[in-house]
Image (cartoon, rainbow, N blue to C red; front, top):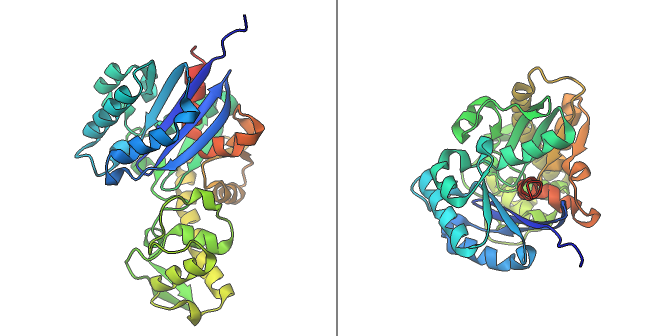
Length: 344
């Protein structure tokens, strides 16, 4: 008889997206991201689980990590972890493993007692996999909303903080992402025809609009509605960007709007660069930056600025060639699938 194949499904339950991977014999063979606005209610997660069912169908094991406990639909992180664990246990009655950071993989019952380890531990899972694959490195994962910056030393995760609050203090968590970040979250003003213009503190545009105008945004990575609910085109993004500085799209030329968009992307990069300088500390100069997430374009620029070699997580993750890029975009889901699979 043919030997039964080992199939592990990996899940990263976020507050804005559900990311799911399928690992077969230790390789990622499928990966997908679904918009899941948990702030609207747990039913959005249920719908996302249903939509991704073909990815995890027939899995021998399901492995989970989460950040969705932060969603403001929950009164606290502990309550969020408990609610998500209940959702997992209800929908997946078979064998499940929950990633609990330094405690490793645990069952759902134990995970409920380790809420502080389970909460927002997805960065630790990916960094742990990178430590196995790349050795010493500065690991940077930029998603739609946040950027994780983690030092890897001597083949081990060398984090300073662990909780969100601790990592914000250490620079290991920067609350800026490639698509969902509000423009006034990266700058308070912008240069317009030689004058620094204060921004309107309104949700008129996001960083996705700036990156779309610059031509560096993959549209599949911008899965939520635009600020005005209108078209996701360069012209639409310019209209939204114009509102941020009290203008209309026709007031400036396309090259001028591109310069303003470039300003916002640059301001974002500076925030990440500042944090990366803190986290890299005594990391050897020849240690590369390993980049994952949808914002790898920005991480490449960071590597150039820090004069470090850039290594795409997609190049080192064990995955079929056809899904390497997506496996990198959903790195924590890839990580828990592969890490859990190595225990089978």
